[in-house]
Length: 168
Image (tube, rainbow, N blue to C red; front, side, top):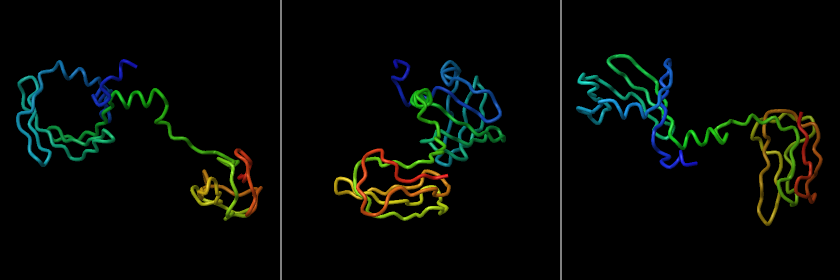
């Protein structure tokens, strides 16, 4: 984990249409900002030559930028040490839910069931309300689908990991 000591340091730069490059290579270049204004206009000196740059759009949190360099527009994405660690650990993977069975996340009592067998549901639609430890917990559909079978009814006491609803 020693590679991740400075999580905010930009490591990779990906420019749409070009091969990615290691941002640390820029540290060895003779680059300086000659002037900059609050509108995103800059003049950058690279190896003794002045280059006009305008930042058209930036999203610092996502590390994405759209810049115009000498009249040509580039879409850039930066990766920090933290981004690389997140990618390495697989936390950036979007899970495509294909769950067909809904289980009780904890023991409790069914307060309300809002779907019936054969009903079509949308992702994140409320399926039921489960009371556990004096708190109401809303159970939502993990994906679009059809309710194959509702295995519980209002007032039922359920155990953790008990099958509540089967979807198809």
